[in-house]
Structure formats: C-alpha cells, structure tokens
Length: 117
Image 1 (tube, one colour):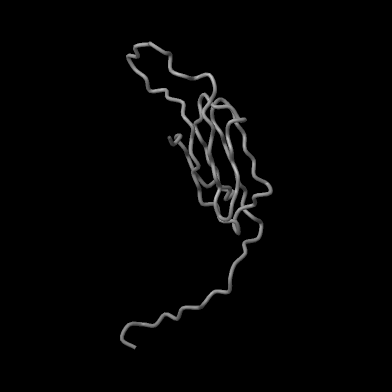
Image 2 (cartoon, one colour; image 1 turned 60 degrees about the vertical axis):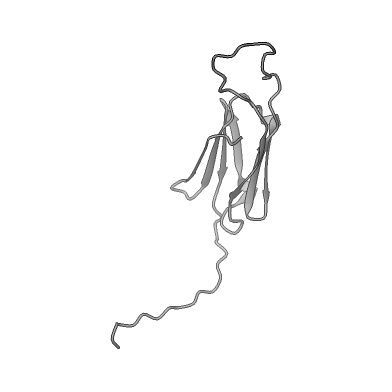
C-alpha cells in the first residue's frame, strides 16, 4: 500500500514531502535517512480491523502496513540536520532545507565551435 504523496521544491529550495496518512498515528510511522535516500514506512494502525460477519456495501478504507518506500534526497544538497517533520490532521509534512554550500566537483569546460570550421 502506498499513501498519496506530494513532493515539491519551495522557492527557498527546500524539498517537501506530504503524505496522507489518515488513521495512522505518529508512533506508527518510521522515517529515516540512509545514503542519498529517505526511507518511509508505517506499521498497521491499531483498532481498524474489519467487522467480523459484516456485509460491506463499500469497503475502500483498508488500513494496512506501509512497506518501506525510498525517496531520493541527495545528501550533498540537503541539510538533514535541520529536517522538520510535522504530523497534523492525518498529513505528515517533511521539510528538508537545502545546504548553504553545495559540494561541487571541478567542472570540465566544453568548447563550442561554429559548424563548418
């Protein structure tokens, strides 16, 4: 199961993830960095089992465990020490600010020539 998710970059160059997690609590969510990736998973929420013997007309709310998902967050471009994760009204908003100084490698100049010369 994959929760609906928005991923965007703000004007300040912060990377933002918004996960829709209705029925979950912050205690059931696991969020961590490993290498150039942010890992996200969640345990099955308690108290949302199907009613035994019930005859459902519609059953779209199925609260299941969310297996590990990985999102690319380059370690050299984003400041993991200042990440902010806020869980409010069933939405987990993770904001990762940019690093002040980017670690860049020496570039190689590409010469451009006029065609026919």
